[in-house]
Length: 302
Image 1 (cartoon, helix red, strand yellow):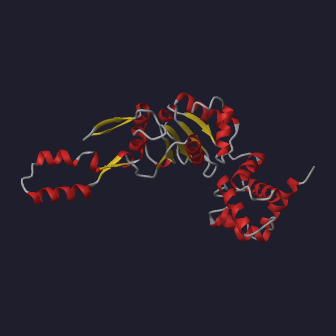
Image 2: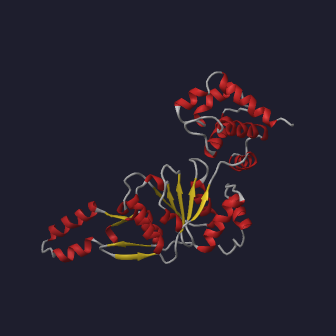
Image 3: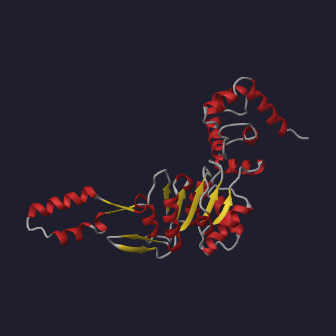
């Protein structure tokens, strides 16, 4: 990371990996790398929170370790498990040879050989090329007890396995936490991090993103796609399309050899940008044409 001596360097590195970000996000990432602080990114689903961890890992040449959060996730599932199947095989083998020393066998069963490392423990291990990027994705899906455990783990960058002791990271991982804000994350955890709200991009920024991720799309089609998606986000929808949906839709249109949007094309491909039937239903009939006409009108010279 010695080459990243400024915010511009960070933005340029991310851009080389196809991630276009504004000055605000670039600043937070730079400070996180410089100060060794975790990044806490909140925002709507599909705005690029997860992708920044992937771009960071690729740009820095580090391993990406992902902990996908879910309801009911606990510390043991996030840190380690014992390979019970292999332990049972070892017990049967020892019994077959006779003269089993149970205390010795117990000590042998709870060693690194039978340990299954989960993401948090993997992130504490030495990695080739330097400390990994640890992505803790959709933290808001977990509960308060897991947050409390995570607070301790990220404060000291170490985890404890009762049978083996404490394992500390020789070099703290680069941590990126994301949340879709389905619930509030505790302030104590946020205070350990540098915070940034990842919002929907402006028209020009989204054009840049689309050009980076789908460079084969013609400029005219790209502008129409972005204008229509941004118009959609002003509608009363259950789930507004994110940048990920913009990119997916553009790629679908390219696969269909579409050169310009039409109400018929929109009707055929709505499943690429809207994921709920109620939202799709709202765009049936003349509604899609109205939004398309407004989007195209906004593209015309004043």
